[in-house]
Image (tube, rainbow, N blue to C red; front, side, top):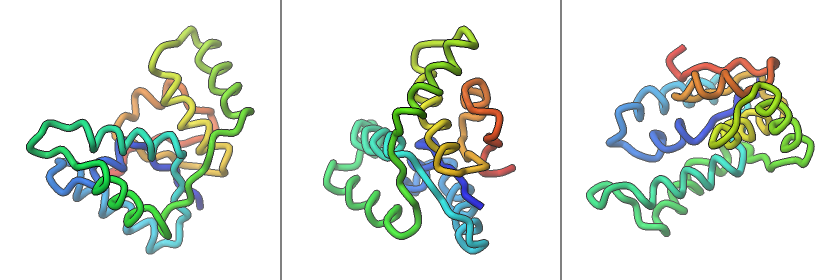
Length: 145
């Protein structure tokens, strides 16, 4: 089984202070134990880096440390997938066909990239946003479900 993971799960995974840290880490560890293949699009990795390095000063992570945390947590545990041109066009087709636009395109790109890489599940703490833009083949759910 392949499970996609978006940045709303990656940020808590890297941040012990985050309210979703424990649930996210537990769910991902359980999936790894069950031999699930965890995938995340490169866009989600870059978004996670951006968030970690622009947090309020008291919890902000310096850029080099953010890079090292991502490397440590993702290498060996996650398959990082890239954006295929077909996934780009499918995402744009999906949201434009639904009359949607704006920032939802970033969620659509992540969802379509995961689906194209063979994920049947996408874990996110932003279920409502992703359900609006994900392909029908992708079961969008939060880490607690």
